[in-house]
Image (cartoon, rainbow, N blue to C red; front, top):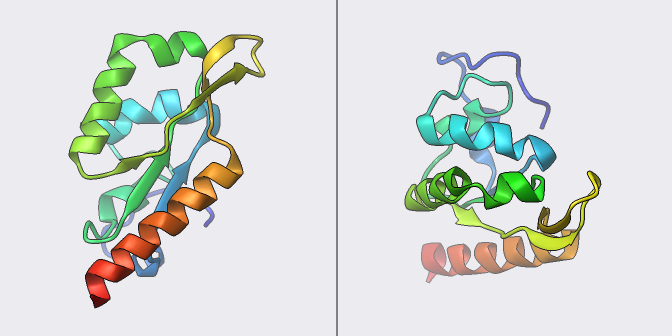
Length: 129
């Protein structure tokens, strides 16, 4: 889905028809976490989250450098997103592009896909079971 330049409140969001939303944002996650938590969601790509059908799963994959990940405010922001009912796919430890060694790397694609499948299976079971 291409991010929009604004969040028009009068247009229905096509993304709301999706069964699941996975936020994979890369290193900009450190910049978007406070925006998601504070609900200042007029940054391109984040308005989809505000309009998301909260009865459907929303997963997020934080990724940032180790210093950002270890900052106490990051834990608060991740906890707030989880309090909204969003599902975290945790970052992993490895050597990062910036040269850091430690937590902050995005989960592997296979891990993300497996979690999406698991959540969809659970969600479909709840809807149809």
